[in-house]
Length: 268
Image (tube, rainbow, N blue to C red; front, side):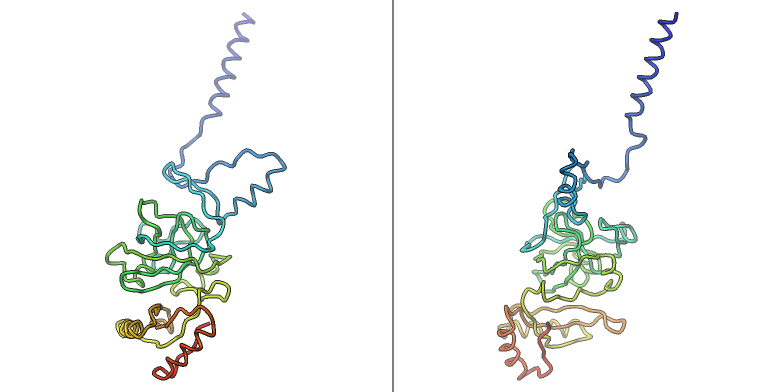
């Protein structure tokens, strides 16, 4: 009898141990970080350096993505989409609260905190914005814009647009950045500048800004852009000729432009 009791107890303990290995629930969120690789004490520090929070690998719908270690030199042409109501007010991958009316973006592999310049190749509009989320997880699309960014690019109504995405810098504190710049494009720092631009005109009417842009492009300033910013609680449109590879080239162009636009200046 004592032998039978021992066998019964052993079976009960085995069953309990087996239950402990079963998960109590399955997360409903398909976005997850891959399991930490097996490391010994000598490799822990190396793992932490390799998987910075901005570049941490993650898994969505069974596929693992490995973000780039840095964004230097990133320049890609592809299709942009935008996302809105379903995600508005929810946390992004960086921990920020998504504001569909701000200018931000989701990208699969750029480090979180990267500042990119997105150019709509159909109409020439540009917007500089912060990558603070992951996506789009649809084949053939390179970036997911906030509704506010898509509106500035003129692609909100169509839903998608062919764009060029160029990394121009990074921001070390996405939350602070968005809190102070939720409705305007980030300023271009000297370190991240991709050339120089000349501020030619400021307009309250969008059509007038794009009319001047077309005029400048026709005069040989093919890189002329229109930037949208908030000023005094309303949107204004900046027309900037460029881009010029160095200050000397910008000064030569400025002298030429000032004959017709005396208020022009180099935007540094």
